[in-house]
Image: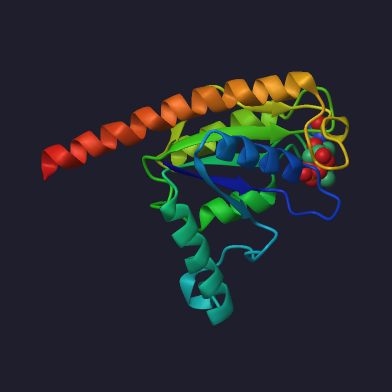
Length: 190
Ligand SMILES: Cc1cc2nc3c(=O)[nH]c(=O)nc-3n(C[C@H](O)[C@H](O)[C@H](O)COP(=O)(O)O)c2cc1C
């Protein structure tokens, strides 16, 4: 099983990448292949029609599409901005549909405040359904992210370490069940 981690925070001085890196490390420690897809690496412009895309943008879209397609499931990592998930993430999601269709998707939301991105996470789970994907009911809420990691980007908050482990337990059970069901259906159809 291969899990993509889609990081929807791109601003200079961001904190959410710490959560994405922690998820990547934890997945790898569990023997699960993980691909951290950082939207800051090859930014996508505000979505326009296909005809308006330059060759450079088209190449970025295709490269991102290939990485999303290669993932059996995804975890979306979003900061909470003004009571919702990031515009950067929504813009990226709007480029694709098939890439997410019928895939298990977990949501991790990150905030500076005490509520751990609860609004962002709930709204993003709703969007997951509109992508034709399956939203994991359990979400990972990382509150007060500024004090949750040390300078080496290792998690130092025990509650966050524990909730991340519980989130991944749930996510991997859910994703494993969906991947297995797809394999059985494909074998029956063959
Ligand atoms: C434009 C903007 C809006 C924000 N709105 C909220 C908010 O509504 N609630 C909250 O708890 N934190 C809010 N924050 C703080 C972020 O949650 C905080 O920056 C956190 O570190 C996660 O975002 P980051 O990955 O950009 O660092 C906001 C930050 C920005 C830049």
